[in-house]
Amino acid sequence: MAGCVSSAVFEVGDRAPPVVQKDSWEGHPEERARSALAAVLGDPVGLVVVRPLLKFHFQTTGTDPGPLTDGAGNSRDSARYALYTDAMKFAGTANKPARIYSSPLSRREVSLLAEWERERRVILTMDVIRQAVGADSAQDVAWRLVQKRALARVGRGKYLVRPLRTLNRPMAPSAAVLAAALLQGEPYYLGGRWALTFHRLTEQQYASALDAFAPRRHPGRRLGAARLAFHRVRAERLGYGIATATVEGVLVQLSDPERTLLDLLDFPSVAGSSDDALRLVGPALPKVSARKLVEYAVRGSRSSTCQRLGVLLERAGVSRRAVAALHERVRSTKSVLSMRPGVPRVGRLNPSWRVVENDA
Image (cartoon, rainbow, N blue to C red; front, side, top):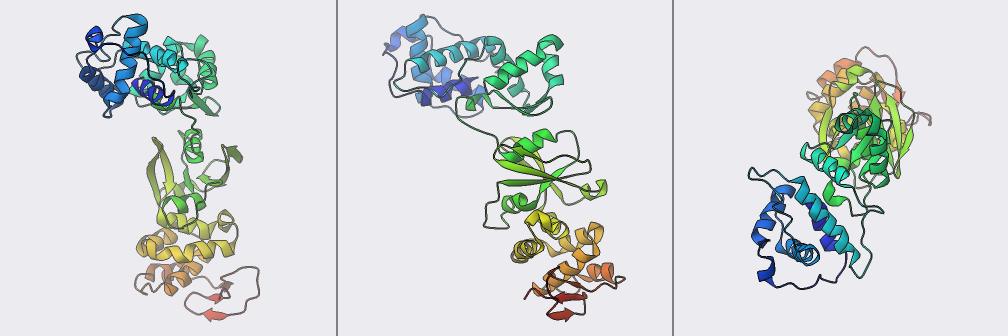
């Protein structure tokens, strides 16, 4: 809660509250308030955040809101709510409009959000909300918090919780965070060009399209400003090459660098076309582990992907010993394919990989 207060003090405007003599608000020592806010936020809090709000509280009420934390360092919701109310009133005295809710949070809503933040909940389901407020009130509470932009609905019965300290700022969660919330509780990973950007394997910033890989079929949909496309894969393909990263406070499953490149070769439509896949994968090969690439390809990629990957690794100067397992994987295939499918097969035939190098 204190996070919301501090942001409001910074952003509501330039006019300071009426000056109050320090001896008239000695019940609000600055150091104590700063320490309490720091304990609630988990971050150092400067006196510039505390001083105006405490002066304003005393000037308008003449009372002490009490310590923000108890003796054990736990936050006190009553004090947090009192300071939140002050921040809303203080915002109303500013010269310029405050960037806050269209409607203020109720005491109950503040308490709920504070409790979820203490529990480090980022994604909520309706079951969690029912446990907190009861089955009869859950739908109404969820609807009101969505209207006040404290929750963001990402799917049926799934909500993303916005941190208290960001509620008065214009902010939209990224498509990756929304996708992670949507797919919570089922196996998946995010990959494609978005993962290429995330792992810094390209200088391009791919953010308008997101690719999710999962064993279950899902319809594509729009998440914020991005389009989410789903690709159905066998469950065993989710057993390797998957990493976990924290994005905006949310744990996201995504392909690791090597798996990201392999998926572009296995699913060239993710890159746009086969030509686009080759254009993206080739320059990124020196930045990843050749050993992992070979291991992953042997484990789950198609023979055609293994053949093309062999040519690319050979061009990158990877030793024959390092790609020996890949050679073994394609030994039994008799197919001669092209680096670029669908265009004339004009070019050198690579006898090791039985690939016509028509991409020169």
